[in-house]
Image (tube, rainbow, N blue to C red):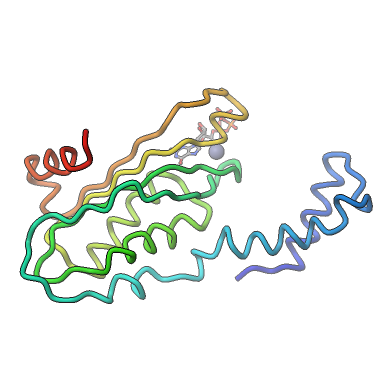
Length: 185
Ligand SMILES: Nc1nc2c(ncn2[C@@H]2O[C@H](COP(=O)(O)OP(=O)(O)OP(=O)(O)O)[C@@H](O)[C@H]2O)c(=O)[nH]1
Ligand SMILES: [Zn+2]
């Protein structure tokens, strides 16, 4: 639940804290603007992946389905700075598949909140297993963290890669290899 009043007060205080004049023309609407932006950036907390992933339909195929290069933007919970990149999701159906867009919607659900990349990766994999019940699921995320690039250690171009395996992907390395081949790695 986004509390506009609290965000506006906090942004005004923050602007004062960095020595700004909150009444100057360019800043006078900023607190309200930031509150509206938060509705979008943190909308995931109000969303439920079950709504998207429960809309499965029957399929005879038990071949791996891969949706790759799903662009996402999230916010790191340590510095409240963006991290962004690509998510790749694959699963082995067990009689049911889901509309392809629902995989990207699931990424959005978990990306649009304060996050850690490892947690984001695991939450997507867990949601697939819980709501679609496939034989297995694997999620890989490659991202650039602005807390690593524009501040702190300042390593532009460095990328963090995380992976979460569930179900048959945990026990069968051949399936994991096939996932990497399909990804083009
Ligand atoms: N594991 C993990 N760490 C993250 C993520 N995003 C940011 N971090 C790290 O969180 C850590 C926070 O470290 P602290 O020492 O508390 O904060 P800091 O002094 O600002 O750290 P520096 O970034 O090293 O300057 C840093 O090492 C960040 O790189 C993430 O998604 N996952
Ligand atoms: Zn950070």
